[in-house]
Image (cartoon, rainbow, N blue to C red; front, side, top):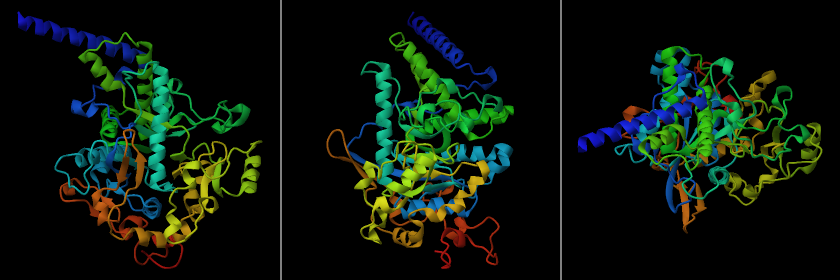
Amino acid sequence: MRLLQRAFLFLLAIAIAIYFYATFYAAVDIPESRLLKAASGPLSEIAFSDEQELVKGQRRFVVVIPADNPNPDLCKLISSAIALGYPSPVVVNWGEKSYKAEGGFWAPYLGKISGTLEYLDRVTLPDANEGDKLGEDDLVLILDAYDAWFQLPPNILLHRYHESNKRANDRLAAQWGVADDIPMKQTIVVSAQKRCLPTSEEGSNLHCEALPESDLRPDAYGEKTDTEATYYDNIRPRYMNSGSFMGPAVDMKRYFRRVKERLEKGLAEGLPFPGDQGIFAEIFGEQEVWRQWRRDFMGRFPNTEAAAFMQRDGEFHVGLDYTQNLFIPTVYAENDGRFISLNNKSTIAQHSFALGISHVHLLGVPEDLVDTYNPLADILPGADWGEMALYADFFTTAVPVVLHHNAWKDGVKERRIWWWDQTWYFPHLRQLLELHLKPGKLRPLASLPAHNGGHLKYFAPKSDEEKRKPRAFSRDTVKTGFDEIEFDAICRYENETKDSKKHWYDEVFRDNKGPI
C-alpha cells in the first residue's frame, strides 16, 4: 500500500511539472526546436544566495577576461586594471585551440561561454589551489577583452555593484507587493544598451517588449525620450549588452551553464545564433517573462517540488546596469559622451548645448567619487578627480567604471587608438604599473558597512600577493596555481617579431622607452 502511495505521489508531481512547464513555455512562446531541457548540475547550485545582503566578513573579487590571442588592445584593458589597483586579471582560453577546432563559426562564442564556465567550475572545487580558489559568494567580473578600459578604482565598482542590486531588489519587492517569500532577486549585473539586438530575424527571441523599463530619469533625452529616433539616439538603455557581467560565482555558474546549453543546442542543430549576445539576452528575456508570469500567479503557485523545478529554470538573478554607472557600451551612444574634466563647467555646458541639452545634466564629480582614494595620490600628491580626464555621458550623467568601445558607426571603433592617450592615467601608466606590479601583502579593495555591524571587505585572490602579472587559467594548473603571462606575450601584435617596425609598447606607452 505504501508503495502505491509513493507511486501516486510521484506521478502527481510529474503531472504538476508538465502543467507548469507547458503554461510557462506557452507564455514564453519559444519555437519547439529551441526549447532547452531542464538545467543540469547539482541542485545545491540553484540556491538563492544572499549577495544583496552586506554580511560582515571577507570575500574575494576577481577580474576574468576571455581571450585567446595577444593584442595591444587586450594589453590596454589589463594595464588599466593593474594601474588602478584591481586584481591582476585571470585570462581564460589563453592558448586554447580546441574551441577553434570544435566550434567553426561558433568558436569565439563557444570559447567565451564554455571557457569561462569551466574556469568558474574548477576554481570553486575544494581541491583548487588556495591562491586562485573562489567561494560561491566571491565576486566575478567578466569583460570583453579587446575594446574595454577601466577608468575608476575597484572600491567604486564594488560599491556601485551593491547599490545597483539594492535598487533592483527594492523595485522587485515593490512589484511583488509583500515583504516575504519574494521568488526573484538580482545578484548579477550586466551592461545595458539602447537597442534590442540581435533581432528575431537573426535567430534569437529576446522578448524585447517584456523587458523592464529603464529606471533612468524619464527626460534623460528631453521630450523625445524613448521615442523611435534616428539610430536610437533618444532611447534609454534597457536592453542587454553582453560585454560586461558581474556577480557571485554561484549565480554566474548557473547563468553561464544555461547559456552554454542553449549554445550547444544551436551548434548541434545549425541554428543561426549571431553571437553570444543573442543567447545571453534570450535567457534574460525568458527570465523576465517568467517573473511577470510568476507575479500574475502570486498566491496560486503551489509549494511543491515541481514548483521548485520551475523556479530553478526561470530565475537567474540577472538584471541590467540601467544607469550605466558600472559599464558604458558606446554602441548607439557614439556622441553622448567624451573625456572631460568634471570641474570644467563651461566646457560641459558647451558640449551639452551642442547635443541639444538645454539644461545641463552633468553637474561635476559624482558624490561617491569625491572623497574616494585617488590612484594618482602615490605619485602625484593632491590629485583631484575633478581635474582629471574622465569619460562622462552628458545625457545620463554616468561616469562609468568601465568604458566599452563597441560603437562602430563611421569608424569610431578606432577610438580604442584615438582616445587612449586621453585617459587620466595614460601619462603615468608606466609608473603606475611599476608600482602595482610589486609583490606585497593584500589590502582590502573595498570595505563596505555590513547590515549586521562590522564591514564586508573584498580582497584580490591570494595569488596576487606574489603573482602581479596577468595569470592564465588552465585546467592543468588548477591545483598548483595559475602561471603568469609576460607582457611581451599578451600585449604584442599577433604577427609581431623583434624585427617589426612597430611594437606593442609603442602603442600602449607611446614614450619611446621600450617594454615594461
